[in-house]
Image (cartoon, rainbow, N blue to C red; front, side, top):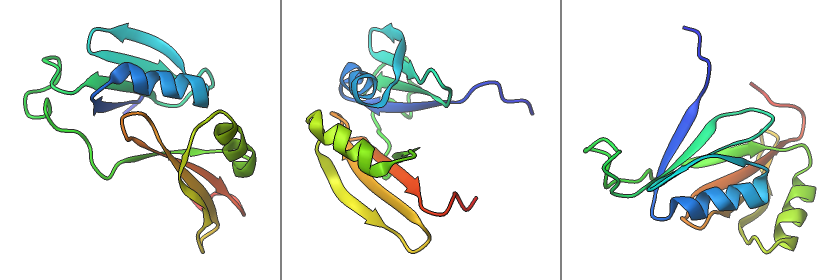
Length: 129
């Protein structure tokens, strides 16, 4: 299999609010906007993020009125302290303080306007996988 792109879709109440949050605070660019949805990408690569309106007829019937639970989007950064300072200076509230796990991962979490969990991660001794 030769994968040429990856897309992650989130069903949310307000797609534009999520897309705008990622554009404003995480360097994404809006690449598609339509009634009931929005798509964003980072100019340096990574997956396309689609935000679809909860209940949209575009969604498969079985998924139309469900949203992912227990899902978080992890963004690995070089300097967690710098990114947390930048975000909080711009009015973004942390949903968890900076923590460090035994396996060498430092992380903090924020929530987007629809409650999506965004985890910022910095590996202390390099990524173990």
